Length: 204
Image 1 (spheres, rainbow, N blue to C red):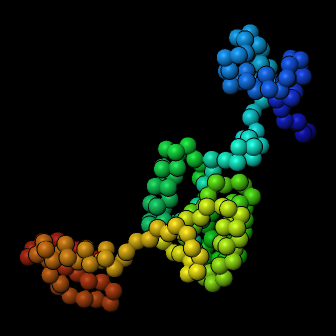
Image 2: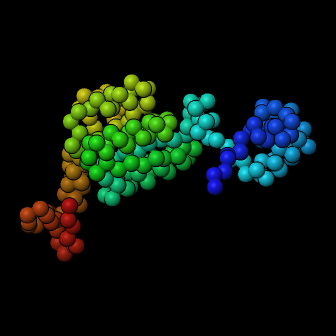
Image 3: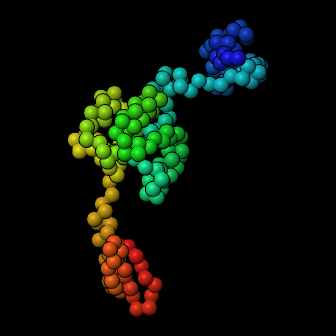
């Protein structure tokens, strides 16, 4: 059995008032009497009324949703980054829609389209390793959807970008180890070991 979703119009008709009056009563507007507010709230509960946030977002041109798209979520770097994005978004009263491309270009395109159709206010993107054609990013920009690229960025699309300087980070880590008196002990295939007297061995 399919149930019809209760609307403001349904409540207004039962109380013989306008939709605007019902809307104001639900928002506790001072111009609405206490008695009418109680009637509206009671009826809204009885009819299981739930605000249609999607319709509201269309009217306000603001959904409170942010899309985040990255190649892999399972990696420590990605999951840590995602945790920070969600925490900051929640502090700003935004909800996050998460997408994973698995470095598949077609999945990337479809995920971006779905996010756009969901009415997101903006999208944070780490580009797929296999992305060569960047037209789908340009199409989103043409729709005036704010894009911020991070970690892996497109070559020919202008816009805000957040990057890490891996070379500088490696230099800083190495300089710190050297300043602490650690010296290179031996080199294996992909492992460099640093040792200081009888101190524990550190791997970087």
